[in-house]
Length: 373
Image (cartoon, rainbow, N blue to C red):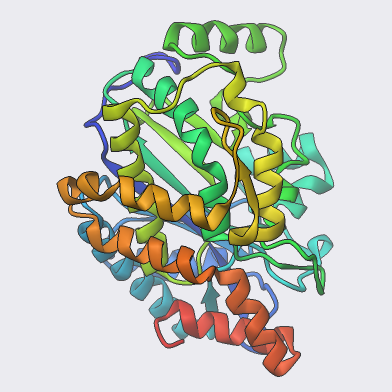
């Protein structure tokens, strides 16, 4: 099977990946621990998949394929408990969050794996600065044409995903004034941002082949787009979420994306054309900078509206689709967060204001990750 053969998968299935922080109990800073954690977890039966990420202070957990929110949440809870138990035995802590608030990127070590060494050689210091933590959500598509249509239609809702998941307000010891500073690090890579407007799979393949012929890329892994197709899985992969502080939130965000996909494919409310991206960068910035208080420009009507209000109106439209997918509880949580304008970045700032200690904040984040905060 060629890298560009789109493997059909069951429509609207979901898979979730979460990049996690490995912390020292001493001061809450990032610490080396991926190798030890992987060995400790391998010795036990556990659900899902656990693997390294680009630096030794990161770990990634991945679920299997799910059709329903409840089973995805159940698997994430089991994986969380397995990783936390292994970390406890090694005297380490695990936390969510899109970026560590005070770690020094120069102290990070690249995980010894060919792909990661290649990235480090190509991108220099950016590879270590890529010690940031995201949630990726895969949505199953029946064929490549459907995948490209869904990818572009879903771009209309990228500000929703960023604002709801934002959990990286601190960077290098200071408040960045961004709810999600993590995506600024991603944007430093040359093949980041939005995918080109190819609305059919054959057009995307033609684009890919031109890029490979010009030796700009070698494989699909070289694209760091906000949403990218994953033909080997038969999915599109949404990559803009900061890692939430709890697995419950991660599951709800994935269910929101799944339910949106059902709306977009069944009702086709988004016209996939060039104008869809006129305000894309502006909307993306608003969501990163101001979170749920940001402003979104509708690409069709050009109306300006608060992101939290746009989420609320979207949740109302999603009601029949949520019922069909058994995701009503998740969509209700999304609406609740939007109405309260409450994301993890807001919680983090509140915790820091109370103690004025970023180390204490990381302790509280680790407790929240294990379900105690």
